[in-house]
Image 1: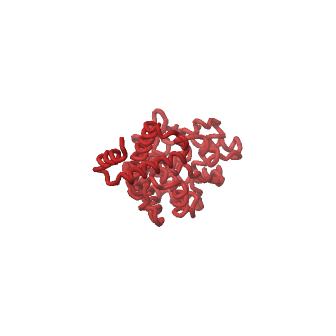
Image 2: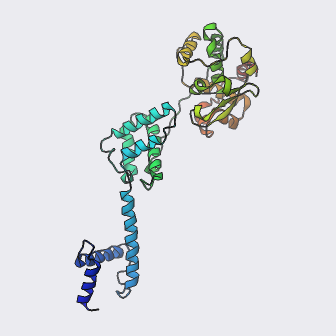
Image 3: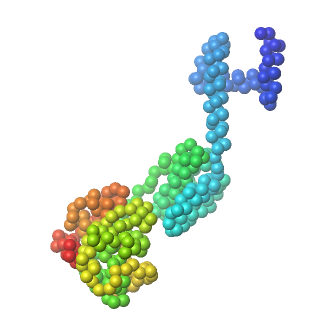
Length: 345
């Protein structure tokens, strides 16, 4: 085909395309140069292999169109963050409050809210976490988990190709050893709980000290439906547990508990009553999670069954037990026996 005829054909083909034949030819030349530079098309390859070259160009165009399509299919970080929170609207009020608080702290970092989710790199996310939560290791770890969940939700919605937070290491926490309650401190709590003004907290104290149930979980327990007195077990339902997973916890000392005076209830003004009980026992300086530590240390020393303890505590694995809750030098054998002897076990 002569040159002028070739140009006529190209003009006819490009009639509805907003480029000239000359521009189209230049683009083909640029594509070839890029393919040669990338080592995909050998520089000395004969021009007679036009069909092979066109086939390769078609593949490049298709891949490029898909890349552009994906780049366009995204939302701002702010929109993705609030959408991920909305997707978890069935969570407990306190969980949603924490999510919203942490998202707002991230959005206050300059330039983050309007960033396309797909364009955010691991380095940007690392800088975001440092600016928003760098002052507290606990907040940084929690912020990282929430940021990871935003990208995980965005990935499911095809707003991003990967989760850049996967490349951000989770900082290690150096757990501070917490001393379990002494035998005298346990006895003082028992004596206080049997006083008329504190009898309403007797069941709560038992569930925390001898079942290892978290204070927030105890407050949500309904004694009528969540305690199986016949089978001697406490049912921690998924909607009432800290982690969202249900579990069954042995109710040790159930007979001694029911033989005591007063109704076995969970009072409404729980926080106030719990503080009053501790003050009445003379324990004004209270260590957070100390009842869980006391339970875990005595359980491990007496029953020597860490997998069972893990399930009762509601942990996913044994690592938290060994790093935070267990005191390997806790008490004597007699002290451990006395602990369980208080409830007839």
